Length: 273
Image 1 (cartoon, rainbow, N blue to C red):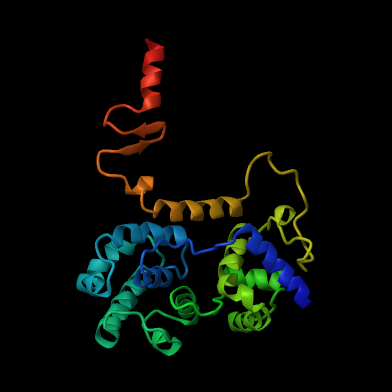
Image 2 (image 1 turned 120 degrees about the horizontal axis):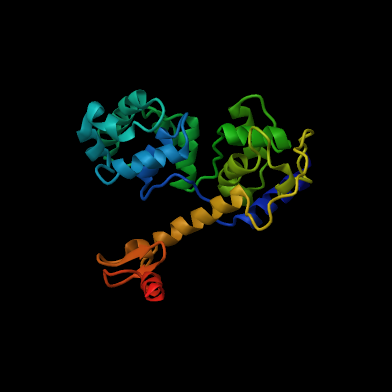
């Protein structure tokens, strides 16, 4: 693939999603590390379901270490291989406390020395926490890189090295997020959404899914995912509905500010009368 084509691909991905981020829910570097570690061989949805229960109880190395292996298991049963991951997570927390003062190390060797942390997890932490332009390669990125011709390779490491070598510097920081989202929602393993793909004309895939008339007015899966990311960031901002004072609740049919029925609920009652 020509360098100009690669640049065009990244420009389109950036235009569609200028501020990409992970779909793993977290509020601290340590929470991100835990979520990424748990995400191996399971979906982000399953990880988020587990961490929504775990993090309110324990979201520091010391707190998780205090749970112990058996105490941790009930919180992460929704993720695959939770028995092994429980042991690795307790070992990881112990090393962080004993060797790093409870903080995440900022170098690859120290990260990969932690139980349950491999090259992919280390790359994500180095990129998102420490601002390095590493590109983690998972199954989605491996597929997109090979299928499109962006960075062909027989192994994840070959694809990673090719992406790092051939991705223009201005795109390296966000390349991981763009490619993983594209693989998860557009360039899927089965029946990729080629007709609605924004890089269809730049892609080298020879067996593109034939075009079908899309449902009118229905956004694609990637568009919905991007909207969800923007909504999550908005909900974490001060003054958002997620941070309302007790006594105020948002209902499905109106905002209740008094503890009584919602505005639209009262309107329906009047109409019935």
